Length: 161
Image (cartoon, rainbow, N blue to C red; front, side, top):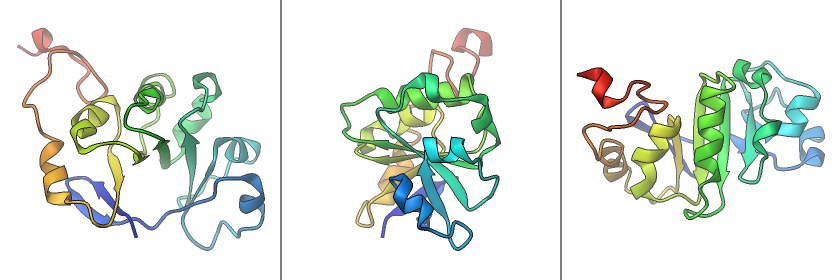
């Protein structure tokens, strides 16, 4: 079972990902924690703490809407550590859609990317059960400061001095 790194701690990952409309319609969404595809959520927004949105890496940015800002959890699944679209989706959700809830990075990212994922707006990370989470928590603070503005620090370094 995967783990979730969040708020400087590690906890169990309790979400179930429903990847298609058939799975969503066949599931009682009130009986657990579910991440459902964006299109299913947009068709019938479910304002519930136990239902979040799962975004595939190929989600087009124009599909992201201000309606998402009312969600509590959104997960972006990386297909590969070489695919940077998840970074862009996170930034768009935080900056353009005003999303302030839990933004999970899942799938094919590397430990070396954690600091940058955090800068783009991710605040939770789904990791394999056998991952060295202590080392990953340290990686979230690999650098003491950043020159550029980002989701985690909106002011560039020269404005902070």
